[in-house]
Image (spheres, rainbow, N blue to C red):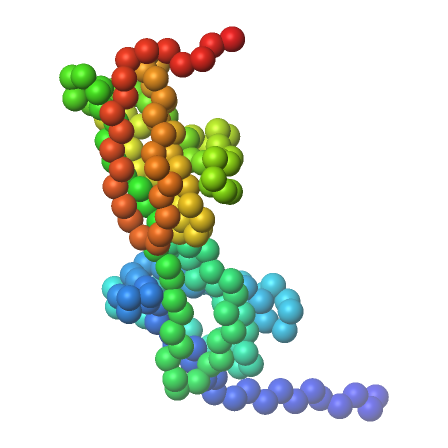
Length: 193
């Protein structure tokens, strides 16, 4: 038999080092970093979480460029980013989701309304709003919080509804980051039928 032995040469791996930061250069702790693909294959499976300084390390990653994703609740989704192992620390950026918080109170008594819904509407032009009734935000004790995965990249309006009250609509809200809008609902009934 003329079977020759196979020879494998192993080389010391270069680590993959990275840091996850906000757009304002703040470290993002407990963000999940995942290998999305390598050589157009969805493996090997690997993920880790960043430390309190937003840093992560993989001691034996693929030694060629590979695609990585980073995610964390409260931040927008990212597209795969190409990273390569070596001595240089890679920087990955996350953008905080937009957030509108506020109160919903009775217009006369100024007391918090115990149960209500906030409906988000995308503004497509003057007088044209597409209400997203399929995903309301339920509020209670007069407080609400609406998060936006797309960081309010287009103008939105909010509609507050509560049983026994007329609905109220916010002005158009736009801009990145967090804002506050408070509703005062008047007693009454909206259209029926």
